[in-house]
Structure formats: structure tokens, C-alpha cells
Length: 497
Image (cartoon, helix red, strand yellow):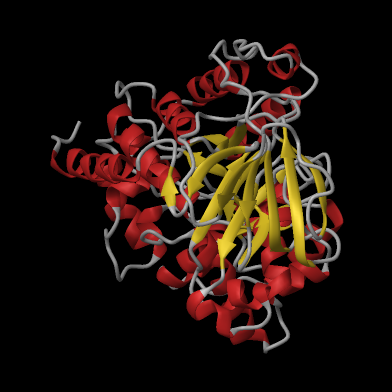
């Protein structure tokens, strides 16, 4: 029996998704049993029902676009993509009428600081360094309850803007404030997004020439021990994994060279990826020249921090040599155009990086430096900023869509699993409604990328519905919003510790 559902109709609430293909848990789900995750011991959700999207304009990113096509989802995987109606309907499938809709891969957010949802609006007219100095005083008060609420709100907001996979760079760990890393991981489980938390760190406080105050930095051995524990406890490298951990010292101006080097060694011993901030502002150039005698990217290169297992946030102030090195080494960039604009940091050389063959993804950055930026909106912002600097052919709508999907997947080392609508990939799918005002633009990809972000008709993560008809089906939207407000109030009113 096939259940017919149009893209306007609300579906049933869905539980969290994700199972690694080829492991005992995946086999058990296919056989109708409900196992625990072999990595974390957390009970896995029930097997998702099949979904068939028909009559949609399909933009697979990899491959030709299909003006009226179908996407078939079974067991959390894409099993068919093609023109016209689906050739066969799986038993018990939910049929989604995608008429007037654009189907894209789920968007991938390559840089974030979820805890910053609780500190939005701080120093709205400051430079990066001015904003950081003011923000650190607040962040020193942070505890696990603040992180849980902020992460719930931030991840819910991402889901509502079409994001199916998100990273998070958490690098502030005040002592005695609970398990902040676990708090955001639990929030991701509740919201239902694929999650790549990055265990960040800072060991150079103000007394050692760094920017952050001493009370928010950690000892090197403490950092490496906690990072190793996080990888062993949470990182799941399996196909279809919902949770992967990266190693992410904060930045050249808050971290010692020893920590950068030892962090890279630790990450590579576990086979996990590396992430940090670099070349965000001209101030950083001056700081690195003063402290290390070289520019930021050359400093990272000396420390072994360029390579195909590394992606770097911002990369606004790159030299020609830097761009070439990114292309030669396969180093990825998380481009955050709204945050760069908000802080007056500049416009990154994204079109040059793409021409050099370097992976480039999009990121919203922390909410405190981009104030509720939707990930889909960064597609438009990326196009506009590149064209403002380099002319009208600098970046196309389709290049920007690829950055938001397959480019982000490349940065995270997951291009074989996500980032495009292809048979055998994970069923991370966004369905955008392009009726109403958007219908005045003939090209659906142009309508999506150049105009206001269209309504989200459906969001699937591993085949499970996370958003339907613009509403969350995991954590209620009102609950997520209240959690964010409560986190903000707690952070801004609690006594400084």
C-alpha cells in the first residue's frame, strides 16, 4: 500500500536517524530489529519507511539536472534518481508530490560555534579582536546547561534552513562547568542532524601573549587527554555515521605551536580530521608576523597543518602562494561570508581557491558573529560577495550550491556518502518549495540561490523526516527557540566564575 502525501502536507513525527552501513546495527535494522549503536551504546531508531519524491526539479549537483524527476529513498539510502515518475514504488512507501519544488542534496555546514547562540548581539560594531575580548568575559561563565540550550536552538535553526550535516568548533572549556562536549552531542541527537563536533582548545592566555583571558585556557596535557577521550568515546568512522569527531585547536593567536603539532599527531594517529581558524583578519597577519615571523598560512604549513585531512575556517587574507598551496595539498576552506561581512574581516578569495582545485564549503560561523544566519542564505551571500569583489562571473549559482553541498562534504571527507543526489548515497535530501513569488524566476536553481531562501517543504536525514512543511518533526520548534532564550538568559545573568 502506498501512502500519498503532497509536499504541503505534514507528516508523522520522526525519530533521530542514522546507521552505519555494513555493521551489525545496520544489518539489524534491515532485518527489522532495533539494536543499540555498537559505538556508543545508544538505542538506534526504528527502520525508516521508504519515501518517493516525484514531479520535482532535481538538482543532484553531481550529474545532469532533471526538470521533472524522482528521488527514491529506502533504508536510509538513495536507491533511484531519474526523470519522470519512479519506475517502481517500494512497499509501504510515502509518496511526496514535489510539483513546484526543487530537490537538492541536504546542505553541509562546515563551520559553527553553537554555544554562541547564547551571546548574540555582543559588540555589534566591533572588529574581530574587539568582539572576542568582549565575548570571552561572557563565555567564561558558560556551563553544560548553556551549551545544551544554545546547541538545541542553533541546530534546529540549521535544520530549518536545509542543513543535514553540521560541524561545530567548541574551544572554550571553563573549569568545573560540566561536560560541554557531550551536551552539544546530545542536542544533535535530539534534533536529528548528522554531526561533526570539533574538540577545540586554547593554551595561550593573555599572560603568554595570547588573546583569550587565562581563565578560559587549558593545559596542553589536559587538552590532549580530553581530546583523545572524546575521539575514543564518540567518533564513528562507519558508512552512514551520525557522529564524527575532529581535532580543532582554536587559532594561531590562542594556541602554542607545541599544541598545534601534538594535536595534529593525535588526530592522524586516530585517522580523524583537523580544523582551525586562519587568516580571518588583517590583525591576525600582524599578530603572526610579530609572534612567529611569518604569515598565518605559512606558519600552519611549517607545523604540518596543510593537507587533505585539514579544513580551515575563513581564509580571507590569503596570498597567491597560499592559494596554490591549498590546491596542491587539498586543504579545505570553510567560507563564512556573512560573518566575514558582519565583522568587517574582508572577502575571501573563493573563486581563486576553486580555480586552484581546493575544496571549499560554506559555514554560518557562530551565531554571535552572524546573528541567526540561515545556511541556505550563505549561498546567496557567497555569490554576491565574490561578484562584488571580482565581477559578475566570479561565482555562479550552481557553483555556490555545490559549495554548500558536495564542497562541504569534501571538506569533511564524506563526498562518497553525502553532498549529491546519487544512487547508493545517504538519503540526506532537501525539498524546497518554489511556488508563489519564486515562480516568477524560470530557473529553479537561480530562484533558490539568488532570491530569498524559499520555504522548506521536506528535509530528510538518512531517510528520516526532520523538517516537514517548514516545521521540525524531532524537537518542536517552539521548544528549541525557548531553549536558546533560556541559554542566553542563563549566560548573561549568572555570576562570573
